[in-house]
Image (cartoon, rainbow, N blue to C red; front, side):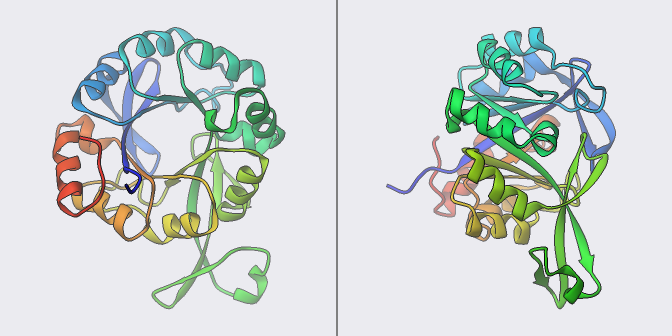
Length: 271
């Protein structure tokens, strides 16, 4: 039996409300986090991701009580991220009901956090989230330290951003993904900042590059607008899971509709 692919709704939370933006800006309200979490569980989501998107940039801790309330309503695997800086923070979130934690800004600043977290709680609990933005290469010879890909005659690399997409780091996203896996990350949540919220489809080249080079499940994120986009990220880029927000939050498509469309294309799904 081939491994079933996963459909994962994402709750980007700020001040207790779920929001959705485009390319990480222009946020608009999408509802109550606890209610939406319960709704997606009922709808047949395979997992749920909850990201407190302003915790790192506001230099504050994640909203523990909100995580607890959501966990009470959700009976599928539940990943929580945003503002986790220490092993103690990870422990608190897992104790509050999360099954996995997503590390982004803190892991870039202190990569040993991945290692310590994996050692203490197991690799399966540690998801490294990578927010990546395309950078066009003018002179390939000056980019020998980066992994570049040729797309339609142009060369690109992808830069890691932190603090909710506000801060460029100069890090190559694919190389950082490889390092995160070496340190013990059990999964990568890969968001294309260029495609995020555009509803124009995932960055297939970026996703495929990760899938081909990293030996852990890759969750593709950023750009889902139709069931076809999700089919493409599974069939063309070979992602293990597709994360989506806008198409579910605003009732454009149900999870069941997307799963049936995928199944019709021969993609193994849990219905």
